[in-house]
Image: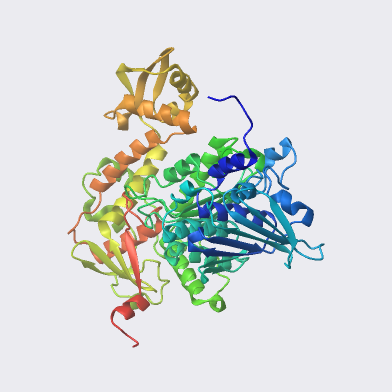
Length: 613
């Protein structure tokens, strides 16, 4: 090795560029963040050849003074922070002062700007080879235009790693989508090879914001999304979370923002997965657009060069808030809410002139009173007890379902004077598997086993919570060898274990004794379960392993205790199941995440038979 020496400015900038500028989409991200930090309300992005040939971004922000133009291309030059104290509460998207210098070191950059107080605009040009700048006057309105040409022209090895034009543009477009979702108040125009790809107007009202979210994520997502707007203990969560039945094969429709900054965080991902734990189909991924707002001093955004990751000062509080909020939101969705949201999306798709003041589906949206549909919505304590003790065989005649006071009529017309419930009234049973019902919108098809499995499962969970955990002492305690760190964690988690029916005692520096387990888990692998809980607690400060095992057993009980295929139901029994679905949490999907019912509107049915043509 040679002696220690200082790196040349050019080499230092290119090393920094390796952290910041990975591909054209990285350039667009940094430049768009600068535009947003400058207060822009309208941004136009022009791309050529996927961004490898040219990137041009123009905004109407505050602009840059003539005296600062050349300085803006220098390393560690920024207007966003001044002292170490500013890092404690960063509110801007960018603050390191490396983006423009890094980009200029690997591309040909032209920066043109004007401010409100200047009489004319000015332009500065810079090429990566020598980093020398040239300042000349240039006409320009208030704002800034950055043009980046020939990316990696002076680093051929980096240029070889660029993908096909279509691939690079897809990454670039995703960056624009993320920032468009983070700032509804800003208009975005994206062109590729002189063709308009996105023209997103600024959105201020709820309907306009839903329209933008729909344009970015698709109408299918918005039709199956729950709107959130909740605040607790200084934490605010807003946005949309997709229903479990609208799951994805990949995690490609997940947008999470912290104080307007898009992030990918393990703690957040874990909290979301927990909220979907017993409603998501195996191997599927939830879809969501969520915005978390909190005091900037409680989150560190300076933990990654690209600022994709953050660190929360109190991660457990954030985790519990996200989990409880999303878990409750998904539980409170009823069929009426889903139908209302679908109608709202259809109005948005029809155009601005048809938008009404109807509120989006949210936690504040009241469900239709169940008393309008039947006389006894909630099962009695005796019915719950009966389900627990005899879940192997369904009660004679669907017990709880028959108890519901439903009219015996079988046609929609016979109920015209009544208020029509969301899932309508049953008219027939198909092949002993599906219930056919008609409501105001058209035809409802229900998978009777899946629906009854979910309602039974929720009854079992309620009963389990009401009765509490029944614990069973072990004749021979189970000894578990652990690390000293895990043993100390078990001392801290003693109360948690006790609440869930476990008695875990420390028998030595690296030894634990399990003296008691929940009776429902007496046949489980206790040692592995305790190890998994301790691992979760050390990793993210919480664990749902025990609760998950209990729910798996209750789910299995519900499956065995639910009505089976080819069981002939009477109309009152079918209507009773429909009413119970309307009153049950998470009734839109079975215990395995599959849908329990679907709606076909009259418009869709008319299209099938070419009516009106």
